[in-house]
Every structure is written in structure tokens, then in C-alpha cells.
Length: 203
Length: 203
DNA sequence: TATTTTATCTGCACTCAGTGCAACTATTTT
DNA sequence: AAAATAGTTGCACTGAGTGCAGATAAAATA
Image 1 (cartoon, protein in one colour):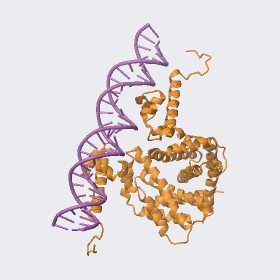
Image 2 (cartoon, each protein chain N blue to C red):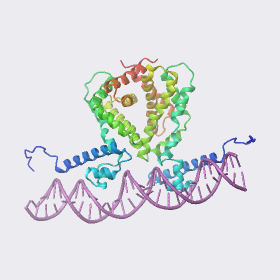
Image 3 (spheres, rainbow over the protein chains, first blue to last red):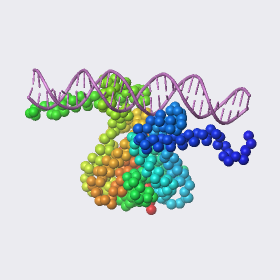
């Protein structure tokens, strides 16, 4: 009942164990995917390598896919948070561009390349990755809407969110195709510049 | 050996049967999905309703998902074909906008609404639908590239394809959410207008 | 037309993902 | 220390998807 002078105040044994197990599963999964490919590694093996039963695996992840998907599940929220954090002033376009740059700056290049390589191993993971872009768009749109709640701006803000997520995706596709030759910031900036070049000049 | 004065010159019995069976499967699938939901209908039932064996089903479709996916699999190619068909002159933006309008004009509203409703019944179909937008983008980009092959335009054309497919997707999301209240042309035009409004005016 | 070649259809047996249930074990609360 | 609660596990089951081998139908050849 009393708050003991404990290092980790209220993170009970349960939650700690849960997080450790979660990590063991993802580690085991990633290792096995690298070793035998996504399809080649079974849930049974992954669970065994993580020291849990097959059945327990499904208490942590709804599907095998989710191991990989969880590695980039919070990008949408990061994106939205960055938009909310940003100071007032500046155009909406600059706002989302800078938010994208901030978010992506926080992700190690090597991780991006490695995760992308693994995801290519499964068509359904690949598909769900594309689907996750829609969710990112939704999260970003919500954040933008808080700043510009005027009803008549809705469509434009949806378009802006779509373009921001789309440009980021194009940049990451290019970055991965190039194998990380150029720094991601540069590629990303190029994508956003191309948006302005294509649309601001056009009659 | 000789070309007989035949009604259907070279469509052999085989191809005809194949197409009929394909149609029977999709019809049976759609009916059963409506009746019992996507997850509720098994491949076994669909095959039986189409008059073939379970095993044969997988000679026609790689997965249950593909029944629904096949209903809109050629949108990307239609889009690209429209771009190739278009007369020279006009801005790239106008070109893709008009191509989008042409393609979408050829799809019955009721079908769009019905297919969308069915697709909501399965997360994996939903995911693969999102993934199909990437393929549409790719097809559209190829067609655009034929017209403007200059190397330094590549990124801008990728952006243009992304925006065109994205705007079309946003429009169809809105159209479906509204239940077809406004005609699709109008919603689609609104999405493309919003692109110009958002980016051509911004500093 | 009869025969050979070739593509398609089918049943069977199998692997694996994912789920519901009930017993069991560990944590937390009282 | 006991009772309540939450996590773990084994078991049995459904259903998707695949490889294989024999049967069947279409197409080419003679």
C-alpha cells in the first residue's frame, strides 16, 4: 500500500514478464525469419525458441504476420504526435513535411533496410504493410484536423495527409531499392520537393 | 487446319469452359459471401455451389481472397491504357485526372458499393485491396513514363501517379462512406480539385 | 475415325495457422 | 494464508492451401 522507495514504482511483475516475453518472441521470430524465411519458420518453432507454448504465442500476437508488423506499428502515431507538437505558423505542407522528416530521423537506417527485407518474404505481410499506410493517413488526418477544424477544409486535409504519407512511402521505397545509398532525409526531402514542383507550377 | 467460317474462330472448348467455370465460381462466391459473410463461407461450399471439387477451386484461384480481388484487378491497367490513349497536349495533372474520370465512369455505381461492402468482411482482403493501389500506381507510372521519359522527371511522375491513385482512393472511400449519395464523378472531381487547391496556392 | 499427346479435374493425405475450452499455475489482493 | 484474478498450457478442432498420382476430357496427329 505504501509507495516503497522502489526503482520501478508500479510496473508489477506481470507487466515486466509480459514485456520480456514479447521481446523474446520478436527476437526469436526475426532470427528465424532471417534464417529460414518467413514462410519457412513456423509458429511452433518461434514459440519454442521464445520459451513458450504454441498456444501462448497467440496470446501475444494475433498472427505470425504481426511479429513483423509490430516493428513499425506506431509510425502513424509518431507522425500525428509530431504534427501536434509543432509550433503554430507555416503552411500545412511545410508542417507535414517537417513532421515526416522528424519521425524518420528517429528510425535507424539499418533497421529500415532490415525490416523491409524481411517483409518482402510474405505477401500477406506486404499487403498489411500497405494497409498500414491508410491507418497512418487516418492518424495524421486527425492531428491536422485539430489544427484546422473548419468543415470546408476537410477534403484538402485528407489530400494533404494522403500526399504526406504517400511521399514518405515513395521515399522509403526508393531508399530501400537503392539499398540505403543516399541518406533517407535526402530522399524524403526530394519526394516532398517533387510534390511542390509538380503541382505548384502546373496551370 | 483450314479456317472454317466459324462463328468463334479460335476460342476452343477448353477456354470457353474455363471462363464459364470462372464465372460460376465468382457468382457462387459472391452469393455465399452475401449470405454468410466472407469468413462464414468455406472454399468447400463455394466449390460445391460452382459444381467443381475443392481441389479444382485452387486451380482457378490461389486463395479465397482472390475471388473478391479479381473483381477489380484490372483497374490499374485500365488507368494506364487511358493515359496511353489520351491525345498529346495538356498538363500531366489534367491527363491523369481525366484518365481517372474515364476509368471510373465505366464502373457501375452499384457494383462499386456492393464490392466495397463485401470486402469489408475480411481483413486480409481489405489489406490486399490497399496493396492493389500500389500496383495501380506502378502501372500508371509506367504509362506516364512512356510519355515523359526524361530521367529527371522520374520522381515527379512517381509523385503524380501516387497522387492520382491516392485521390481516386480517397474519392472512393468518401463515395462508399456516403453510400453513393453523390455521383462518383463529382466526388472524384472534388478530390482532384482539392489537390490543386492545396498545393498550387501554397507558398 | 482411331490413336497419341497434353491439359485439366479430382481425391487423398498432409502441413500449418488460428480458435475455443478447460485445467493448471502464478500473481495479486484481502 | 486464503480467495480472487490473470496468464499459461495441452487438446481437439476447423479451414486454408499444397503436392502427388490417377482419372478424364480436349486437342493434335496420323
